[in-house]
Length: 173
Image (cartoon, rainbow, N blue to C red; front, top):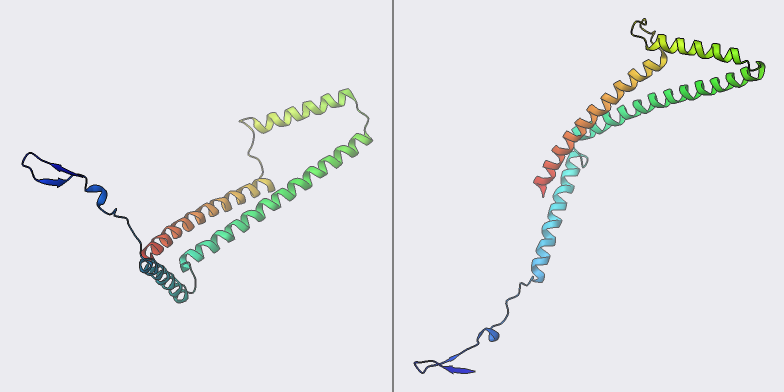
């Protein structure tokens, strides 16, 4: 389509439709070079693993081993406490069952037992009560607390080593 202007020259009005559309194209060679770069990175990481003897650093492996050890000890304490608690509960049930079979139920005995229980609870929770003798249960809780703190510290160390490892791997990539 040709139009005339005031000076009489002829120009093409719509040349935009005749221009080829520019499209981004990725050549097969670009894809191959990208794959080669990735393989080079993998090879560098494999050489690093061969050189150091593992994927993780020695510090990280040591921290993981310490964490595992702390968690194992914590599990042992929890298991031991649970077993003692289960055994004591079963003994109380058995004694209660035997006691109820041997003794007839007397209303006055029940009231006396309740009064003794209230007195023991009052003595236990009163502010003037003498310090309690350390029991196996309190020792277990102290040990449990100690191992829980150790596990928390180990987790902190592992977290720190993971950050260090992340920085090392970022340098490789």
